[in-house]
Length: 433
Ligand code: 5AD
Ligand code: SF4
Image 1: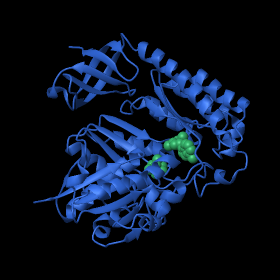
Image 2: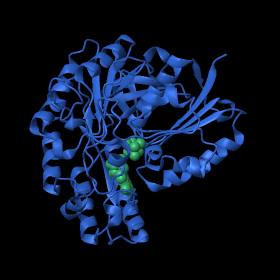
Image 3: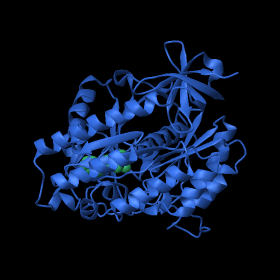
């Protein structure tokens, strides 16, 4: 009988893909069956995120709960960014943890699982040309990592300390992954990296120089690839060549994540983001002009140290001007090992909460408007999920979640859908004959 694996994945899409890689490597050693019930698992992995403080606190209470209810002899491992960051301290605080596996050490999973109290968290470990075994949780959409680590030094962000320096994965490996995914039935390729449009700046060995725009061209030429998405690009590296390829290549889905972080040029400087409000707005203007119908999403941090009322007003101003189709907004959370954690001009927590509330309330009204404005339009929808209520759902190229009445024969296919109704999170429509 095969062993059972429970794996909880927190954080970003890179973690989602890293979890798939862990499952693939474990399975190559001995067969595992995935379970959603930790109590029957032989192996429990918590795949952590370190980007904000709250999930880190939660980790230890969760570990305690898993440990109490686990099957006799079951092992518990902690993986991901908090594993990189806290390392052996995790085992000090929770001595029943069997192993700690940092982000960027994922390829060692099959080995550490049998080495009690193993701690593998080297952020210089280079697995950029490691050929992982195959495992995908979706047959429709294939996540493919294009780089490891992050070379930026945003003063709020712990990621360079948990994922290390940025190294691009060789283009031929990526293209090969895309070919395998297509052969297995995927129409959509989702490229992942901390900073995707910085692709190609550094490889670990001798590799042909390919930048992100060229990589997009290469992927779009793979027979069977119908859609390409990617995350996250950095506003600083959105040169004209990149925006033009994004707009003109029909295989690239017309949704772009452009993380603003703050609308105030002064705060952007303190964050070391490398661009100004003007540059950001100029890039958005170019995107909207070149790719009509594009959806733009963003990330915003409020209450960064030193953020004055006037600075926050600049963030509100950009939100009003851009009308983001989607926004992820967070209250600043000081993180260890970051520059901003040492700043002495923290913002009062209540003021930050009030600003976050104001921003989110405004953004909700934008989203309501955006969603209502889609009624009557026609979108190409790639159907991926069967829902319990007799509907099938998928994403339009510009990333709206669209539902139609139907059953599994729609799955894995792209149809034109006329939108008949809207809600805040999704659209409803009818397939056009
Ligand atoms: N506090 C709050 N939000 C943060 N993010 C990154 N670091 C912090 C922090 N210290 C947010 C950024 C990033 C997203 C993934 O998380 O907006 O884009
Ligand atoms: Fe979280 Fe960032 Fe690590 Fe992703 S890279 S898991 S968002 S800390």
